[in-house]
Length: 299
Image (cartoon, rainbow, N blue to C red; front, side, top):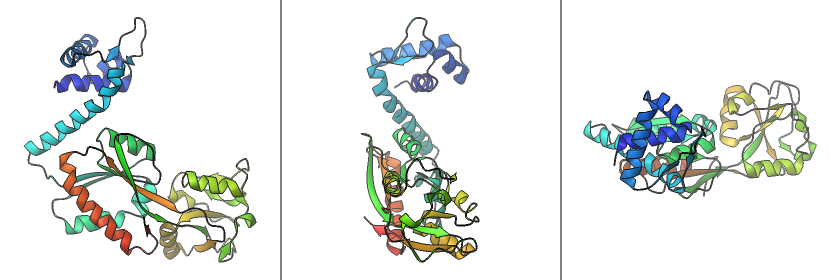
């Protein structure tokens, strides 16, 4: 298979334009067209419709199907280059959301690196949707996510869950050890979306049209806003306990609890050969971590 043509095809798909792909690859547009024509002849199929006068390209049905195949070819080429250069086969690219990477899985990563020689971890934080996209094209090998997105090329499995708890700053608030949602002022919440089931529970107690003064998209920001009178937030218990020790925040239980946060492991249906062994090692450390963590429940 012509890898130069495949890379050119993916550049065209990414930029949605032959001219922009030429700019990206530092080539002339005629060279890009030649490489695309050569690839289509090799595959004996048309990948891209070239409509007269249209600046944005349009993939044929075969072209859409070929995108993931092309990405797999590029990933296999990277693995081949690593093998030729005698790079370590124990390498794992992990993607997760910031709250999981920062507050939950750090111990797993440290334990692997302390106990396994020649094991390389590449850890990145993304939104859940991005993690699925990166898994599809083999940019990462495994994703740990708090929500599932259906896709034919990926396999997802619920691994563990934990309850969500009520957190406040006792210097600015005087909430009881047990709180009921109906007694809370949602305008004082520092809100972070913990997933679809959480949002459904949230909307069942508070009017979605009610104005929340502060909504954030990362856990770290929550604690910047709990120093206001009657401010409160909802957090996974493992994160809440970490901050309870450091900053003496108060943790209360819900009388009508939100659904537990579920964590899913997602991998490619057809994993690259190089990741099979490191995936097994990661799974064993992750399972041990879940078994030993008092705030997590096996699923």
